[in-house]
Structures are given as C-alpha cells and as structure tokens.
Amino acid sequence: MLEAQIHVTLKKSVLDPQGDTVKSALATLGFPAVQDCRVGKFLVLRLSERDHAKATSQVDEMCRRLLANPVIEDYVFQIREVPE
Image (cartoon, rainbow, N blue to C red; front, side, top):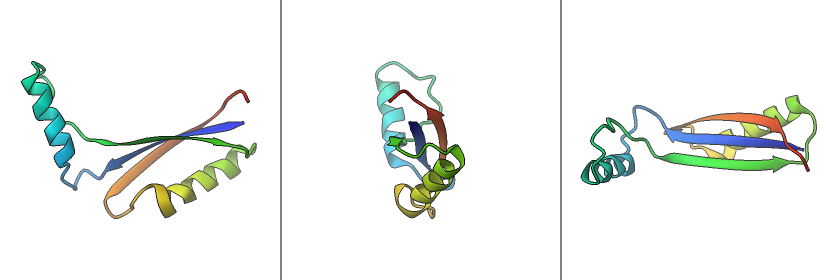
C-alpha cells in the first residue's frame, strides 16, 4: 500500500493573516525568535494503487483539481510504501 503525504501552503506572494496571528501569539507567549509563520494544510492519503508512477500522477492530479487552489497555493507531496 502507498501513502501520500501532501503539504499545501499559500504562495509566498499571498498574504497569510492566520500565520501573522500565530506569529504574534507566539511572541506574546515568550517566543520572539519566530520571524515568519505560514499556515497550511497537511493531508495523508492511503492509496490502493501499488504502482509508484501511477500513484504520483494521480496524487498530482488530485492536488491540481481539488486539494490545492493553484491560484493562491503551492503543494508538495511525497509517496512512500507503508504496511497494510
């Protein structure tokens, strides 16, 4: 069985008010070393597909069509073998 781990984040050119809020809250809690914070999504998909190349193609299409908004978000993913 294959597992896809997907990170979706706002593009660098897109303002991230949620990230700014987290950064500010961390500073208030005594963590002033945080210079920037970007908030995103982390998804884990377990796939019945066994062919790594097919799984890569399918996950890329899933990201482009549904999981990420290509106008404002970037995504990266990793596919690995996991026990069933």
